[in-house]
Image (tube, rainbow, N blue to C red):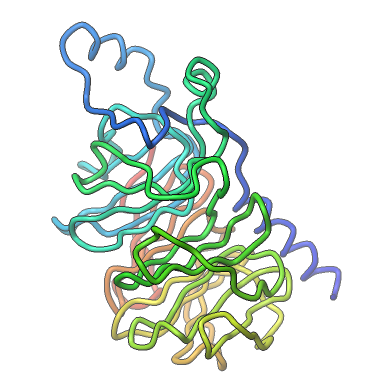
Length: 294
C-alpha cells in the first residue's frame, strides 16, 4: 500500500474510532428530568463534543449524534434531545419512528451502576428522548451501522467483525470482514449489494458481505440515498460519487477530513468536520453551505 494511502487509512480509521464516554446505559430507559434536577443537569451539560453521526429528522431537520449524546439542529445551533449523555456511535435513522445506535455509557454512570463499556445495539422510538437495549450489550461497539427495513449491517470495532441481522437487530450472524472498516453502506434498491471503505480501500460485495472485491485504493465515509448514487468523502475532503460502487467520479470537495456524512435524498447531503461546523449540499456535493456550528 502506498505511504500516502496508508497514512489516509490510519487517519480515517483513527477519526472513526472512539474511547469510552458518554451517558446512562441504553437498557435503563431514561426520560428528561424536571424542575431542580433539570437545572442541575443543564448546569453540568458538557454540550456536544465531536460528531459521530448525522441523520435526517422527520421534520426536515437534522439529528447530530455526538460523543456526549444526541442533538438536533435548531436555528443554526445544536439542542440536546433527552437527558442522556452517552457516547453515540454507529448512529442511523432506520425509519421515521426508529433511531438505532451503539457506543458507550457515561464513565461515571458505568462505574456507579456496574455497566459494561459497550452499549451493543440500542434503539429509540421517541425521537431520541429515551433508549432501550436491543441486543449485544457489553459485546459489540458498532462504529458503522445501517438499516434497510429489518436488514441491518454493522461493523463491530471492538471485536473486528462485520455482522448482519435479518430481524431488526434481535439476532446477528457474522459475515466476511474485508479488513478494518471506516464505513459500510448498501444499495437501498438491493441491500445485498454493499460498498465499504476501510484499510483495503473501497470494496464491493454482491452477496450481502459474504465475499468482497477491491474496487480502488481510497478511504473515507459513505452515504447511499434512495434513488441516488453512492457518495464518498475521502480523507482529504474530496467528494466522489458512483452509480454502482465500481466507477467513481470526483464531484466536489469540502477541504477537510470527515467526521460524519449523511444523505436525505439523491442530491441532499450533510457533512460534519472536526471543527464544529456542519455543512449542507443540495446539488450532490458540488457546492456546500454552512448549516450549523457549535
